[in-house]
Image 1 (cartoon, rainbow, N blue to C red):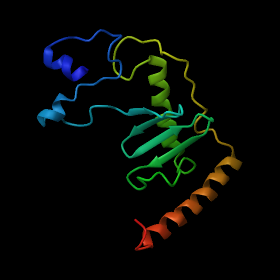
Image 2 (cartoon, rainbow, N blue to C red):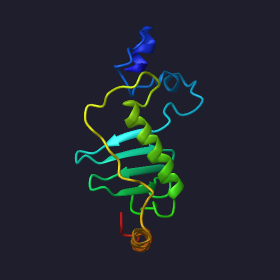
Image 3 (cartoon, rainbow, N blue to C red):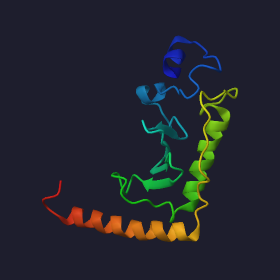
Image 4 (spheres, rainbow, N blue to C red):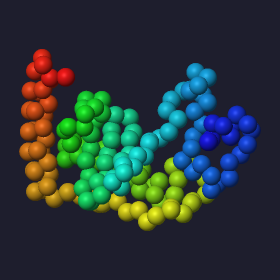
Length: 153
């Protein structure tokens, strides 16, 4: 929406295209960096996720969070939230800001269509962190075994 508005010379009102950025510089080959600070996704189950660079933080509907480094783990098999608390906190802060503002673009605060609350990301107990680390080792071993199997595709 923002790209079309820019091309047409139309200023979008604050309550339209709250998450729309113009990607015209990308189309023209003049972009100097990412258009968005981060990208938000929502699954059909209601899980929310935020992506920034190689990181994807998922807020599961059951209250749990998972963090993946998509550069190293595109299949999202190794949850690294326990090992990367700073990335979890940074992405959770951005997501909370988007929720609080009702938008991810500059402009007047907008009301969200539904109530949204995030779990307290990054506040896992020691027991939870130990369980995540143990689970991650098992997933990593499975991932390595699959990678070494010439018949696995």
